Length: 402
Image 1 (cartoon, helix red, strand yellow):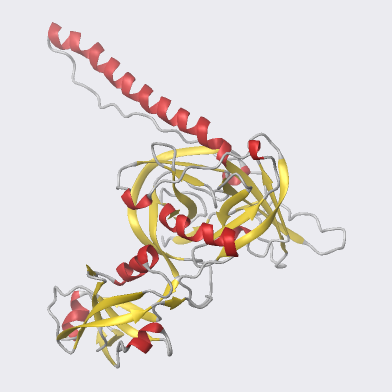
Image 2: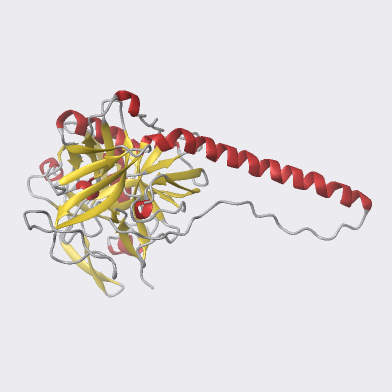
């Protein structure tokens, strides 16, 4: 069955959700064959129980500290005229003026003591009203401060006493490793303060900024993949490391049913730290931009370009006229060939390094731009052109609106 990316803002409906827990799996032991083995069994059980208690204490401690920093967000949106609610759940009532509204639920994270709340752009985009509910049940209206569709991050602001705000502590996601503990806190199905536990199951995913968009869009790099259960309503919630620090903002799930299938995604804190301060200060964020479309140099593609099958890099397929890459003189593919029955572009520059860092796939370019690129910065691209290696200087510009 084919899977589909789902953004994980939820509908404002009443739903039942199955709780999930993390337990210890203990392999069965063979029957003891001696008094010595019998005497060892209780010690083994004590050791296992102690390890489980340590994990439980850690997770309980993180929840008690960080749950105050995660809020529930409800938005009202102009009705599309198409019911987006599951069968049996009516749409929200029309407003007094007669215009129908849709309602959606999601999560948010207290970013600072000034009342700035971090969430996903896809949750608040187009909202006519935004309300924030804190852990103690206090509900207040919020206003949109700034939004960045290309990273799917947004900031809303509430006016509450600083004593009610518990800003989250942010980790450096660039140091994450697969296998680390991952703890998600959010409001799946509107169930506020829900925690699920799993692991970082992969790193460096590159996903479309809105998988439901029709037409071209930009991608979000460095995405964290986790098996911690994430469901509709988790959008904008927190993905935490084992010290309770924010390593990502929960964003989407890969599913055929619309509910968790064990593959969830979070926008990394490295992008949060770049984008959110700019949103608070100016209301927008300027992404560095090359103006190219790229393809990874797989063995079949390399062979079609008379390159070694082991050649790694990113083929420049097309250039946007007037873009930084176009102005710098990069060359796009001018020919086509057929590989495995499909027409592909060949003949353009192959980028093999970005500021001296090796490029293995086209995703590496997107990631390097997001991690280190700055508008106005001049970068050095190493390219293969007609069998020769050369350096091309490119001055980055602000990315056009997607």
